[in-house]
Amino acid sequence: MGKCFFKRCLYAILCLVIIVLSACTHMPAPPKWLAKIELNGPYDNELPEKYVTQLRGASLTSDWGIPYIFMSVGLHYESTGDEVRSLHYFDRAIEEFRKRKNLYGEGTATSRKIFMLYEFGRIQDAFNLIKEKEKEWNTPSMKIFVNHNYGHYFLMNGDYAMAAAYFKQAIDGNSDYKDEFNLQVIRRDSELEYGISLILTDYVSKMVKKYRLMEFDQAFYDAIRTKNVDNGIAHLNQLLVMNKEIRKTKIGSYTPENVFQMMEANAFNFLGLANGIKGNWKDSHSYLERASELAGKASFRIGEMDTLLFLNQVYILEKNINEGKKAAEKLNEMG
Image (cartoon, rainbow, N blue to C red; front, side, top):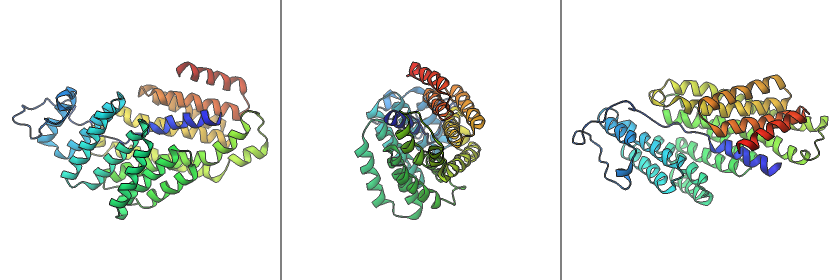
């Protein structure tokens, strides 16, 4: 169970989303001679038409949005499994942020590039990029991005305590985030991953030892019901507040609703697990039901699978083995 559960948790964590711009979706593309942006680089002649429309429109009315659109292109190719084009367009986004002297935007795009490297199995490359940026980004505000990415690295590798320590540093250093979109997004993402790290810190190690025996005595419940779980819940609730705030921002208003729904589905899934750990069965099932609903609306298959995984865990903690098996069977059918 230990390795299986850990791998499934990684699927949830990999699907954490840094919000990117999908601006100008319904704006007709201006003529090429009028648009200020040149799309004559590698792979530009293969861009989906919707991104061409967005880029040309933004070049006339919303120049600030161009690098965010290139991030959207990077995400598009990431979702199709095209590592080369995904990497190219994340680098293009970074370049466009640099042209506009938007260092925080560069931090966001670089973070997304690092997550992409994880997804394609390039763990060492991701770590090397973090180390490189640690030397380059030596101001307090840019260390926020460095600490967050170190936290994500250790979270992905199952070192929850170390991950939590880095996420705490990222949060503590990012108190003045409300007037800067990129700082707001990285703070929200830190809240989510910090909450996850805290919830998993005591639970996974203790559950691995007990799962095969299915013998959960009071000492076991006491060992997993720690302050870390309570603190994790608090940070997930803060994430939900921040997600609503980001919806209202200039960039957030251009972001597809399913992006917010995916983020909230992740939060509700881990709130469901956390409340199951605490023995709050009714609340746990309510959160997981909400997560499943949001994941369905967002066509977020991984989120739906995570709901079944955590439902299996909660039923086992309830000592309702039959229902736990049913949840596991549904999960296997989806997998």
